Length: 430
Image (cartoon, rainbow, N blue to C red):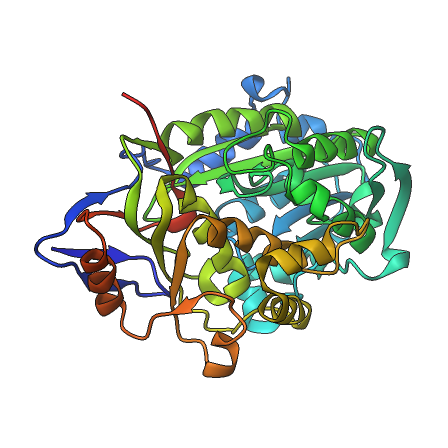
C-alpha cells in the first residue's frame, strides 16, 4: 500500500509493508465553496450570525483609519481572496487608502520581506495601494502598554498601529493549534501583534504545562482566556476567518465581531479536524503539514504533538518534515542545545520557574510532550549539524524506519495522518 504525506511543496509517497494493518486518518470530506470571491464579498457585506449587525461598509462609515492584521508566511491563509475586497470596501466607506495598513502578525517570528512578502499577500494591487508592514515584537516604541491581565498578570503590550486604528480587523485561518486550542481570531492579535514581554509571559512553563493548553480545546485554556481579555482591553476588533480543506480550497469564510465570528468558525472546523479512532497504535506516521508549515523544525513540533493521543506509550512516532529553512531561529537552536545537553527532564527543570520564557524555548517544551509518550523519528532535509540538535531520532530512510517499527512490534497496526497537525485524532472508547 502506498500513502501520500504532505511534505514540502510537492508531497512524498511512502510504500508501506504488505503485512501492515493501516488506518488512514483524515478529515471527512469538507464542503468546497464554488465561488470563493463571491463568498468573501458576501461575508464582508453582512454576517448577522457572527456577532455583527452590519457589514464592513457600515462599520467603517466615519472611520479615518484601518489596520488589517494578517498571519505570517507559516500559515497558508488565502490572503489573495480577501485583502483587496476588504480594502476596497474600506475605501468605499471613506477610509483613505494611505490610512489603511496591512500588518503582518509575525509574533516573534522573522519578518516576511521581498518575494516572500509578495507571495504572502498574493495580490500586487494590495502592495501598490496600501502600506504593508511587519510587526516587530522587540521594538518597544511600536507598542501600547495597557497594563496587565486580571488573573495571571500577563503584560498587555500590543502594536499601536492596530490598537489606535479606528477599524481593527484580524484575519486568518482557523485550524487546530497545539497550545491555544485553535488558531485565528484573537490569536492573530496576541501573540501575533504582541510585544515580546507579552509573548514570553503566556508562553512560559506554567502556561505550556497546563493540561488545558492543548489542541482543539478552548475550555479553561489559559492562553485563550488571556487572549480574550487582551482583545477586550484594546477595545475589541473584527475578524475575517477562513477554513480550508485538505487541498487548500476555501470551505468556509465569515466576518464579524472577533470572538463570536471565531467561535462560529471553530464550530465549523471541529466537525472535521477531530477524528475518532478506536485504539492507540504502536506505530504512527504523520507529517508537519507540508509547505509552508514544514519550512522549519520549529513548526514540525506541531505535527508531533498533534499525533500523541493515539500513540501507544513507548510506541514509535515517525514524522516527515522537509525543514527547508533549517531548525528555525537562533533562539530556538539555543533552546534545543540545552535540551540535548540536559535531556528532557533537565531542560524542563531549568525553565520551570521562569516568569518570562526565553524566546522560542516553549516549542522545545512542547516537544517533550511527544518524547515522553514514545520514540520520535524525524525524516527531513536538515543538515547533520542541525539533526544533532533536534532531540529526536533521525530517519535517513523513511520506509526502512517504518518497516523496522512494525517488525519490532507484536502488533502490525499502523496509523497514518497525511495532513499532520491539521487533523487531531483521539481515542474514542466503544
